[in-house]
Length: 463
Image 1 (cartoon, rainbow, N blue to C red):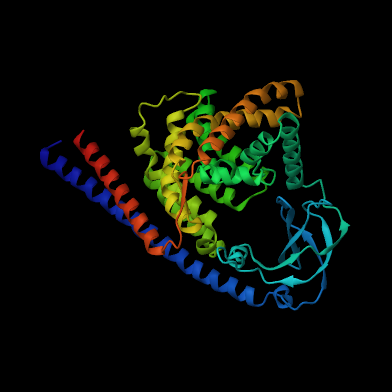
Image 2: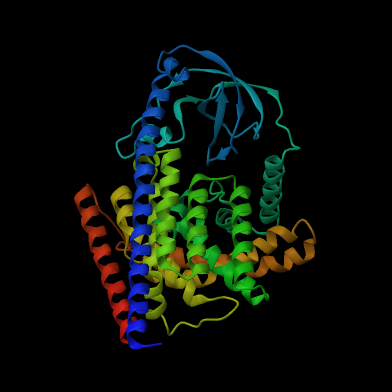
């Protein structure tokens, strides 16, 4: 091949590459524009539905009314009561009832009481919080008559029954409060955790451990992928099995909204890892957020869980590689990749810290140290915890043996939490945080990520 022909061939490849990249950017922009239009249309549709909501017309009248509806979500068990989402002629009502007698998913109820508009507190807009779930009316401690028990033959009902059995196994094998922490970590049940322990976890920056959120899904991903590869699966097989297991796990814990979003975004993160491209992960994340906002645009402003999941996944995509290089001294084993676990968790925490400070007005000064002390055991605790819960129904003696490492790790977690929460300087309250501070924080984060990516690009060109 002559030099001129070779040069023309290289030039044609160069122009073809830039043409394809330009075309992909145009297609990407067109898709986002379509989604933006759909989000605006959807927002107007939901607003119109809210204005025409029939239940809302009975709010704050001071008169008792009788309604018949079905429990359409897993009951949300709290410390002193239960929150029931009841669907009445296609419209949702949130009922606060006593913990006894128990009510289950699918139960048909006849309720009598006074409907109210969700209140707006000084530090929390409960009304906006419920709007995102399509709930515009609440009722407190109504008279309840059970008309029919929910069907137990359905797939979702069977999954919830499995969850109840797993919960029972945990509480049988572990003493309190260790059992309540483990149930919160792997099943999302936080109701049994004592209030003082919850406060200590907040002070020490460890509350994310007992919340099924982006960080927990990130830890689960960090466990699953190395574990499946260690078991002999190919990377592509490990990817598909991880997606299936995470999906089942999200259904198991009751399709909690934060877990669903974290699962979707975590799935796209895995897809980017499988394809070996950050750009795929970031674009997939944008598209997943666009799809969710098209379904429910109120998530963007009223759902902190959505914001945290989105930001945590951005941290996984752009900051995790930086921490991987920074933490080269941390051991990297096939079975438990400690370096990857720490990298993913620190990356998610840094990206979510500003929004947490803005919404909750508290920053934990001991969080970096407590997370270093606790995060290495979280993966072990989740593995032993899952095995304990599963084997409790199959072979109780083995579950009893597994309860010992679980108990030891949980006691260690509680001791670390107790020790660091006792210091007066462990956390600081920041009042009246302005949204401008939030904007500046993410602008600085964005510039830092841009600098990292530019430096990596220069290293790639150099070598």
